[in-house]
Image (cartoon, rainbow, N blue to C red; front, side, top):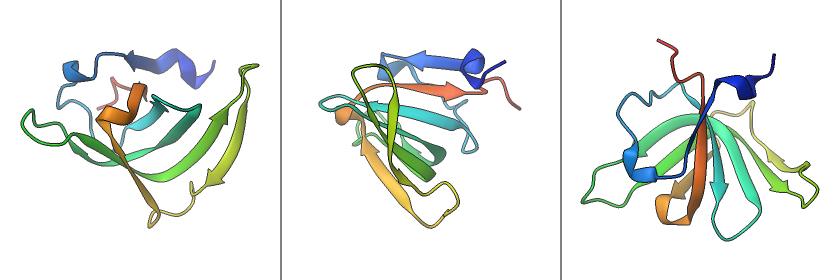
Length: 102
């Protein structure tokens, strides 16, 4: 069984709740490119009146090819000091693994 069985996809980014914990593994798909980030959610800003973002650590960056395969562009999965900040207005959609994890 693959991890994809436990994914929840969010196309509407405004419907996120605070049940999104900091241990969540998240897959973020960018709007204007074929880039996808996979990593651990380190920080988030979801307040309506503020600039919304995700901050990922231990992340990998992929190029999504037309044939559906991924090409790894960067791998910081073993480095918790390396982080990427992703603003919501650049996100197409995202998926969260193991949402029911307590």
